[in-house]
Image (tube, rainbow, N blue to C red; front, side):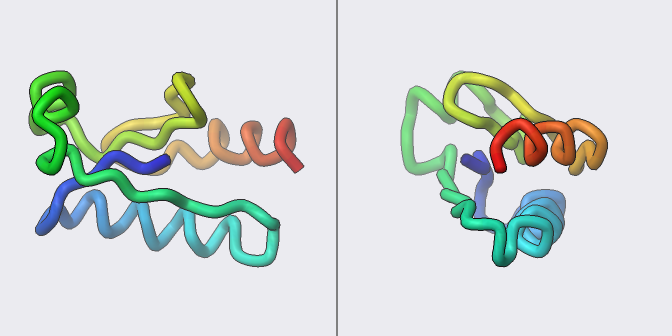
Length: 76
């Protein structure tokens, strides 16, 4: 799950990078606009993008490639 907001270049960059890495791997990236949910907006504020698997944070602000690759290996 990628927490994002409209007009955020960092969010767009992470979405593109993660999308390219999971293409053909059987994973789906779900985008969640934090501005669409008051509780998420309060919780994360401007602290986006955030990439999560359930409640586990994988990375924030930019793609942490080693962390994401480790996640991919753990979730083939």
